[in-house]
Image 1 (cartoon, helix red, strand yellow):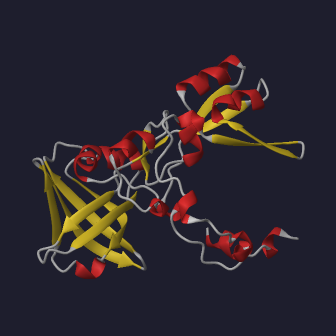
Image 2 (tube, rainbow, N blue to C red):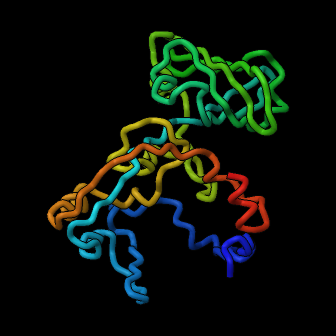
Image 3 (cartoon, rainbow, N blue to C red):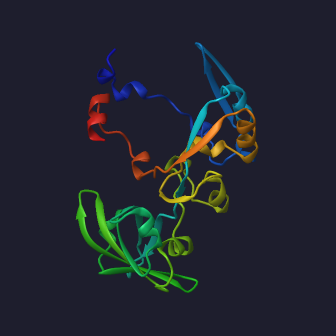
Length: 243
């Protein structure tokens, strides 16, 4: 079968709700590891991944860091409006370090409830305002301004924003997610979702890889909200062309 003929429905399967792990294991590297080698499939534990990677190999890690991208505002009428920061209108590192104001492309939950010019939120002496500048399809151009204006946008989000976690977990983010929904090597702020394959690596696993002569390099690839969105195309070709 040609890849272009693969239908999205071919990927459909039943996932019982009881099998969704809503919380991580106590130890990152205790997760199961699926091993495929020479046509044989086996399972192991992530702690042993270094045994399955040949000496002299190179692993490339995505060092992106998840930001507190969700801001929950309350309107004058008491309604809750969620502004989900997706992508800034300038380079990511510059936007995160900006002081006083910045402009982002956002998703807005319950946008119909946003009647006033600005939405405001204050937490522990830190405040942020959001003004809707324009809308294109499902995305909104939002200008943020905040006080103290000497704080960076990163600092404001850390104080006021909420860490986004996958919606299929069907729970609000909690204190445990601040650590566990980040990789141990997360550095460059900008993702709205974690590069989840890397969540299982620990310092012990990295040491075992180095001891086995496996080199480790890093790249930065920020993960956007598309990872949460359902695929709307009926076949592989349509999904590819939509990217």
